[in-house]
Length: 275
Image (cartoon, rainbow, N blue to C red; front, side, top):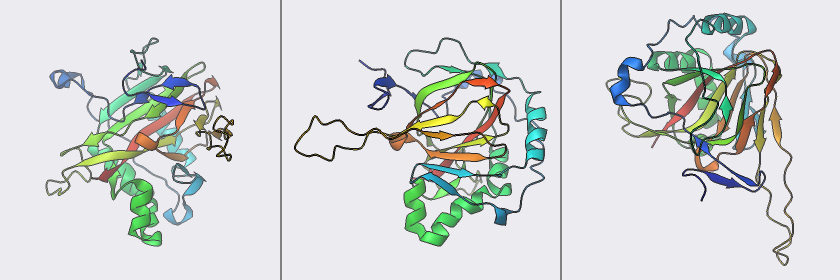
């Protein structure tokens, strides 16, 4: 029997597991939760008018080139190197995908709001609804986007480190973890719908690879006819580029390839929509 929460992929021909956008924490271990660091200012940035959403796969994969400038990325890599990163266990828990990297995780609504509002990300995501009608924005993002998940994760992959094939899970959120994190917040239920990855460096290897499910056979008479398996979509790293991909029930099987040279630094959060 496959592990709880796993999905079966025809393209991979094996069982893989989901990973939570907001790992559960033991409320008794609040003292072990790191305090938000003093993040550097999000400057300099390219003009918001120079940014745009580039679709790699309809309703699934979108990139934003130069969301962060190379100068800002260098500043953040230097800063993040000073944080207490923890290396993931070499042996994952039962039902978890194999991941080998160093990471830092913190609950920080203030930084989530800064990343959402100061980088131009908010305008780009909101413009989908403004230009195509509210229904288009809601349909693409899975609801009205409220902001970013306050669960901020920092990943560093060195040579030999990778993230095996997996699915990203959608996670429900409730106040006070729903953006914009105001006392007057009217939304009482929300969930994450898209993964946000911001690449701070380039390296050798480390690409994010997505595997689409095979298309149904064109022959309705031959049920056993082999289905065509689409080629994987390989997203190479670009300094300052943001990658958005759908997660939850419609998440594509994907992996972070092994880094063979240099270091891969990533800032991770998620789009949050009202329910």
